[in-house]
Length: 156
Image 1: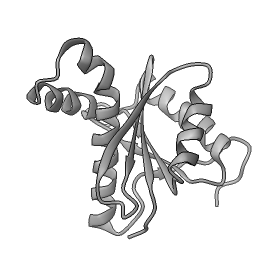
Image 2: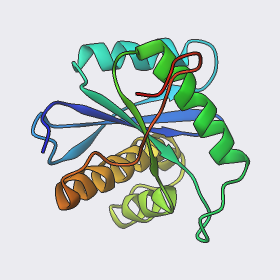
Image 3: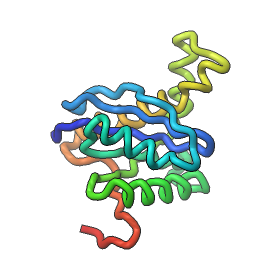
Image 4: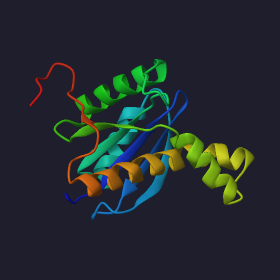
Protein backbone atom coordinates (compact mmCIF):
# COMPACT_ATOMS: atom_id res chain seq x y z
CA UNK A 1 0.00 0.00 0.00
CA UNK A 2 1.43 3.31 -1.08
CA UNK A 3 1.21 6.37 1.14
CA UNK A 4 0.54 10.00 0.39
CA UNK A 5 -2.49 12.18 -0.10
CA UNK A 6 -4.59 11.30 -3.14
CA UNK A 7 -7.10 13.65 -4.74
CA UNK A 8 -10.36 12.38 -6.17
CA UNK A 9 -11.85 14.37 -9.05
CA UNK A 10 -15.49 14.05 -10.12
CA UNK A 11 -15.79 15.83 -13.48
CA UNK A 12 -19.17 17.27 -14.38
CA UNK A 13 -20.28 19.57 -17.18
CA UNK A 14 -20.71 22.55 -14.82
CA UNK A 15 -18.72 21.68 -11.69
CA UNK A 16 -15.77 19.52 -10.62
CA UNK A 17 -15.91 17.90 -7.20
CA UNK A 18 -12.63 17.50 -5.35
CA UNK A 19 -11.92 15.16 -2.43
CA UNK A 20 -8.72 14.13 -0.69
CA UNK A 21 -7.47 11.17 1.26
CA UNK A 22 -5.53 11.16 4.48
CA UNK A 23 -1.78 10.50 4.02
CA UNK A 24 -2.24 6.80 4.81
CA UNK A 25 -4.78 6.48 1.98
CA UNK A 26 -7.54 5.13 4.21
CA UNK A 27 -10.26 7.77 4.27
CA UNK A 28 -11.61 10.23 1.69
CA UNK A 29 -13.02 13.62 2.70
CA UNK A 30 -14.48 16.52 0.68
CA UNK A 31 -12.30 19.49 -0.28
CA UNK A 32 -14.19 21.84 -2.60
CA UNK A 33 -16.22 22.30 -5.74
CA UNK A 34 -14.47 23.96 -8.69
CA UNK A 35 -16.45 25.74 -11.39
CA UNK A 36 -15.84 23.99 -14.73
CA UNK A 37 -14.24 26.15 -17.41
CA UNK A 38 -11.49 28.73 -17.54
CA UNK A 39 -9.12 28.27 -14.63
CA UNK A 40 -10.43 24.86 -13.50
CA UNK A 41 -7.16 23.03 -14.20
CA UNK A 42 -5.17 25.79 -12.50
CA UNK A 43 -7.34 25.55 -9.37
CA UNK A 44 -7.04 21.77 -9.24
CA UNK A 45 -3.26 22.08 -9.69
CA UNK A 46 -3.22 24.56 -6.79
CA UNK A 47 -5.24 22.17 -4.60
CA UNK A 48 -2.86 19.32 -5.51
CA UNK A 49 0.10 21.50 -4.48
CA UNK A 50 -1.62 22.70 -1.27
CA UNK A 51 -2.27 19.11 -0.18
CA UNK A 52 1.04 17.80 -1.53
CA UNK A 53 -0.87 15.18 -3.52
CA UNK A 54 0.95 12.01 -4.52
CA UNK A 55 -1.67 11.00 -7.08
CA UNK A 56 -4.90 12.14 -8.72
CA UNK A 57 -7.87 9.81 -9.35
CA UNK A 58 -10.36 11.07 -11.95
CA UNK A 59 -13.76 9.43 -12.21
CA UNK A 60 -14.60 7.69 -15.48
CA UNK A 61 -18.39 7.60 -15.87
CA UNK A 62 -19.52 4.42 -17.57
CA UNK A 63 -22.97 2.89 -17.91
CA UNK A 64 -23.98 -0.13 -15.84
CA UNK A 65 -23.15 -2.29 -18.87
CA UNK A 66 -19.64 -0.81 -18.96
CA UNK A 67 -20.16 1.27 -22.09
CA UNK A 68 -18.65 4.72 -22.39
CA UNK A 69 -20.61 7.67 -23.71
CA UNK A 70 -20.06 11.40 -24.09
CA UNK A 71 -19.49 11.94 -20.36
CA UNK A 72 -16.71 9.32 -20.34
CA UNK A 73 -15.08 10.94 -23.38
CA UNK A 74 -15.20 14.31 -21.61
CA UNK A 75 -13.69 12.80 -18.44
CA UNK A 76 -10.89 11.14 -20.45
CA UNK A 77 -10.11 14.44 -22.19
CA UNK A 78 -10.15 16.34 -18.87
CA UNK A 79 -7.88 13.70 -17.26
CA UNK A 80 -5.42 13.93 -20.18
CA UNK A 81 -5.25 17.73 -19.88
CA UNK A 82 -4.84 17.43 -16.11
CA UNK A 83 -2.08 14.82 -16.52
CA UNK A 84 -0.23 17.13 -18.91
CA UNK A 85 -0.58 20.02 -16.45
CA UNK A 86 0.52 18.03 -13.39
CA UNK A 87 3.21 15.78 -14.92
CA UNK A 88 5.03 13.89 -13.49
CA UNK A 89 2.27 13.51 -10.85
CA UNK A 90 0.34 10.34 -11.76
CA UNK A 91 -3.28 10.77 -12.88
CA UNK A 92 -5.51 7.69 -13.00
CA UNK A 93 -8.98 7.04 -14.37
CA UNK A 94 -11.25 4.99 -12.12
CA UNK A 95 -14.73 3.64 -12.86
CA UNK A 96 -17.22 5.86 -11.09
CA UNK A 97 -20.52 4.11 -11.80
CA UNK A 98 -23.30 5.47 -9.59
CA UNK A 99 -21.10 7.81 -7.53
CA UNK A 100 -23.40 10.80 -8.00
CA UNK A 101 -26.48 8.71 -7.19
CA UNK A 102 -24.76 7.35 -4.06
CA UNK A 103 -23.67 10.87 -3.08
CA UNK A 104 -27.22 12.22 -3.48
CA UNK A 105 -28.62 9.37 -1.40
CA UNK A 106 -26.09 9.95 1.38
CA UNK A 107 -26.74 13.69 1.43
CA UNK A 108 -30.52 13.19 1.47
CA UNK A 109 -30.21 10.64 4.29
CA UNK A 110 -28.21 13.26 6.20
CA UNK A 111 -30.94 15.86 5.69
CA UNK A 112 -29.07 17.86 3.03
CA UNK A 113 -31.50 18.79 0.26
CA UNK A 114 -32.25 21.34 -2.45
CA UNK A 115 -29.79 24.14 -3.09
CA UNK A 116 -27.41 23.02 -0.31
CA UNK A 117 -27.26 19.54 -1.87
CA UNK A 118 -26.44 20.96 -5.31
CA UNK A 119 -23.59 22.94 -3.73
CA UNK A 120 -21.90 19.87 -2.25
CA UNK A 121 -23.04 16.85 -4.30
CA UNK A 122 -19.98 17.06 -6.57
CA UNK A 123 -17.65 16.98 -3.56
CA UNK A 124 -19.53 14.03 -2.12
CA UNK A 125 -19.37 12.22 -5.48
CA UNK A 126 -15.59 12.79 -5.45
CA UNK A 127 -15.47 11.32 -1.92
CA UNK A 128 -17.43 8.23 -3.03
CA UNK A 129 -15.15 7.82 -6.07
CA UNK A 130 -11.92 8.25 -4.12
CA UNK A 131 -13.03 5.98 -1.28
CA UNK A 132 -13.89 3.23 -3.78
CA UNK A 133 -10.45 3.62 -5.42
CA UNK A 134 -8.67 3.52 -2.03
CA UNK A 135 -10.63 0.45 -0.98
CA UNK A 136 -9.89 -1.30 -4.29
CA UNK A 137 -6.19 -0.56 -3.92
CA UNK A 138 -6.17 -1.87 -0.36
CA UNK A 139 -7.97 -5.07 -1.45
CA UNK A 140 -5.82 -5.76 -4.51
CA UNK A 141 -2.46 -4.27 -3.49
CA UNK A 142 -2.34 -2.55 -6.91
CA UNK A 143 -2.91 1.10 -7.90
CA UNK A 144 -6.54 1.68 -8.87
CA UNK A 145 -7.76 2.24 -12.40
CA UNK A 146 -5.79 3.14 -15.49
CA UNK A 147 -2.80 5.45 -15.63
CA UNK A 148 -3.38 8.43 -17.92
CA UNK A 149 -0.60 9.21 -20.37
CA UNK A 150 -0.39 12.95 -21.05
CA UNK A 151 -0.78 13.92 -24.71
CA UNK A 152 2.54 13.98 -26.53
CA UNK A 153 4.30 11.67 -24.08
CA UNK A 154 5.11 8.00 -24.40
CA UNK A 155 3.58 5.35 -22.12
CA UNK A 156 5.98 3.97 -19.51
